[in-house]
Image (tube, rainbow, N blue to C red; front, side, top):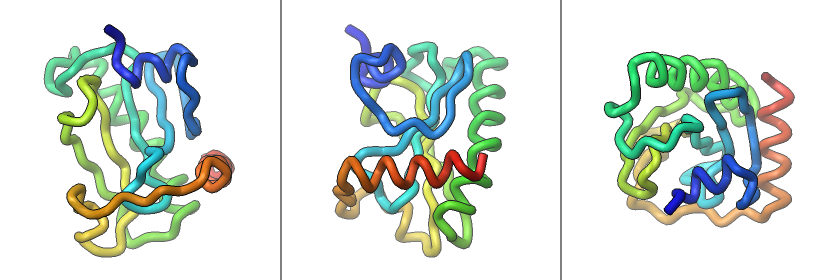
Length: 130
């Protein structure tokens, strides 16, 4: 059965896209830790990041690197945190998280619940800086 991320890639489930190319997709987390929390995924469904082919892993990181400055401009922060946990969805994904303190990357804290319009606005702001 396809993962939720594969269903997003196929357009079966909507998302708030930030960027996309032939191999990768970046979109907003719908339950972010902080505003501007972006997920970056390969379009190939591979559960564990280190099971990706070397070229796909390198491409994923370079794709994330292109998006990071736009997130930082759209959501002013001290740093952009990067996390790979991989337990939530069995499809490789990178979390890009605007942070001003270490606690901003605490996945056990309560998630935000932004409206669809808030997410759309944030995605549009990030895209404007790409």
